[in-house]
Structure formats: structure tokens, C-alpha cells
Image 1 (cartoon, each protein chain N blue to C red):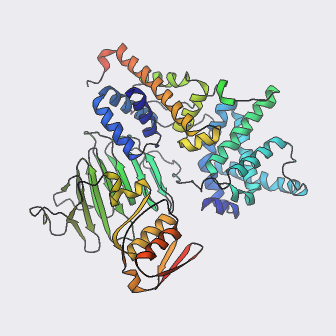
Image 2: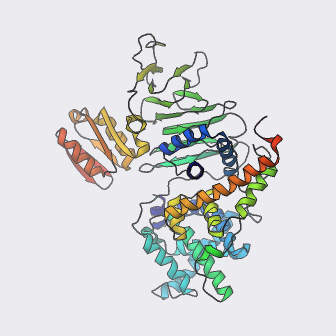
Image 3: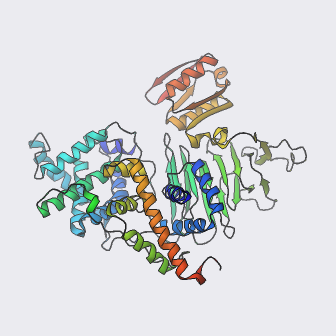
Length: 361
Length: 185
């Protein structure tokens, strides 16, 4: 029953529950069923409509908060005189809350993933989503595009995103599945490069402490140009190509193994990735599938990745160890386990102290 | 972590939490009790209790789920006390109020179509409607909705399929009824 499956995938996509494979499956199904594709565009539009504020919305939220803090403070002596807070005016109620707190304790780790900025002036305000170190976030943009945000990353877009061009600003790493709309290009702006697309799937990595930006294309095509430089022609990236832009040398590099295209521009390198690799097994997008993959990077780079992944601070106290290179793949492993496995291939020791990891020869 | 800051008595962290969640929780409480003043009081009480017992908040593993469950329980208790009886299986027979959508001025869909969609959602079975509301209006994950309503994730998934299919039927019927207004532009 394709109807059933399409409805399920549409619901999952709009609610941010769909995996990249499911979104791909949905795309395939919708190509065969254009009516449903049209329905999805309508529902996506409806879905992201803002909800009207409540009729009597808080006129003065600050005063409201004061009232809450004061009430809590004033009730304290009364509660203090009775050791069990359950013996209150409404015992059921308090007991319920405590029961709930107890039930959820330790079940899932803290998943308060993101904090949107409160909507202020409607005209120029921006919507910002942050995935903190140690957490990842999935979000649905108003146009139906889906973004996976990796740990320690930030994405923002204008509150009037739907009005003109679709433009987002990214710091960190994100995987984009952009909803097709030929009339309105989708633009990703980063420190080093600007990527323009019509509807496609790609990954962008540009952490502030990295000195480069990487863009990897999975499907479709994208145009890449240097941020703030319109004088040069934009470069076209094809599926399974990775662009590396170096910010320290003020240059953009494309890596390619195509001899004719290799020096399209001196400072741009395109890397050809294995065509055979399934999306799920590519190093560049492994994080979307909750896999931590090291593909010959040195320990210094790996440590930076792990710091974001596990929300820890890693110090490598030996220059030789910092130059170790590793090939490894992990899925849902603790940091202790990951380091223990790395120890098997090259000699080093480590000490974990709360959120600080020290690595020695 | 934000919650740890609240446990430590950081008022700024509590303020952010309050500003972020209180409008949504007010809507949620209102959808159940359908009286604004009561809804607002229920939500305030939840925040007062949280701040008062913040030392214990360290044991909360998911603050979002915690707040919704606390509001849900208080709202149902409020209704139970008013009705002088226990409300069991709360959202199986018990209808809720949706939040009004904003006018579709700069949107792709017409006001007429938006009304059709809203009506389709309005007529969903109560539990299905509550699930749809929490997923769409509050942006909650299936996992969170399942915890808040005491359901399995599979039930939430299945109910969302029902909701999308019902809306789809209404939308398709709309275009069949007005064939000239279809895709061509």
C-alpha cells in the first residue's frame, strides 16, 4: 500500500522524524505519484505556518516571572516546615510531579537540544538553532527542507525566510536535504564559501576553529563561490565530489581527479569520492547516521571532532602522538571505548577526569 | 548544561526556560481545560514548583517531557476535581482545542484550503488530534509525545499516518471539487 507508506513518510518528514534513507525513499515514491508530491508541498506550507499567539498573551513576561519567583520564595518556609513537600494543599498534584521526575530519571540523557531565539521584531529578526556540543539536532525549515545539525553548530535564517530567496547562515556542520523550488534558490552562507542550490542533498562543514570549509555533494548539483567575492565565476560541484576551501590562505580549493578540471582555479580543490560508496558509508555524512568515522586524519583533528561529539576538552600532551593517524569507525560508543580501541593500533595513554581528557605518550 | 544551572539556582537559566516554554505550555493547558485563567494558573504552578524544588531537578532527564507531563497531570486533575470524578484514558474520548492558525496572507495555500485542512484536523479522533497538535504545534519528537501521553512510539507514528491521510483526503477532495484551481498556474 503505497498510500499508507507515503502518508507515514510525509508525517515523519514534516515532524523531523524521517531518516535520510526515508527521505530518499519518499522522494522516489513522490516521483511516481505527483499528486502526493503536490499534497506534500501544501501540507509543508500549512505545517510551518505560525500559530497565532494566545488572545491574552503575556503583556509583561518579566513581571510574570517575578511573580513566579516570589511565589516560590514565599512558599518556601511553609514547605520547609513540612519535610515531605507532598503534604501540601494539593497532595495528588505534587506527588504526581515527583513521580514523574522519578520515572524519567536516568532514562534518556538530556535532550534539550536547541533554544530558539524569542521572536522579537517580525521584520528583521532571525531564527537561530544551536546544537550544543554533545548533542545533535534535526530541524524543518519553513520551505520543507530538512537540516541535520551536528554537535557544536549553529544555523540561522531570517524570520521572513519564505518571502524571497531562501538563505541560511551556517557555522559548524550540517547536512541539508533541500526542498525543490526552481523559482527560489536555496543559499547556504558560511565564513569561506557560499553555496547556491535548487534542490539537492549535501553536507557542509565549517567549524570556526577549523581553517577550512568542506562541502560534499550527495545528489543534485550546487554552485559554490567565495563568500563576499562576486568577481569570479561560481564553480559547479557534481555528486560525490567534495570541495575544500582553505581560509588561512584566502583561497578556495576544489579537489578532483579529473585532469582537465583539476586546476579550474588555482586555489580551489575538488576531491572525487568513491562513487560506489553508499550515502550511509561516506565519512563526510557518517555523523548523520550517528557514526563517528576517522579516515586517516591526524589525532589533533580527531580530538577536535571528539571534543564536539562528546562535549569534552581533549589535551594531547605529546607532539608525536598528536601526529598519529587513525582509520576507524564507531557507532554509539563511549569516549572511553573509542580511545581504548585507538590504543590498539598505536601506543598512547589517556586519563579522563570529568570533562577533561589528557593524552600522553 | 541549562538544567544544571537551574539546579544551581541560576535565575537567568530559569528565565530562559520560562520564556521558551511558558507560551507553549499555556496553549497546551488551554487545549485541555479550555479556560484561559485556569490554564495560566496551572502553568505558573508548575514553574513555581520547579523553582522551589530546583535541587531535585537534577534527576529530570528530559525537561521538555517533564514540563508537559506536569502540565498534563495538573490540567487533568483540575478537570477531575471539577467533575468530581477521575478522568481515565484521558484523550480517547476527550476533545481538545487547537491553536488558531495565522491568516494565510503570504502563503502558498488559499484561505479556503487552509480552512479545509483545519477542519480535517478538527474532526480527527481526540487522541489522534492531541498527538497531531503536539507534533505540529509544539514541534515535539514522537518519542517525547509517546512519553507525555503514555503511549508507544509506534502508536504515535500510526496516529500521525491517520492524521495525514485524513488531511490528504480533504485536500484531494478540494481539488476534485474545483478542477480549474489545480496545479496549473
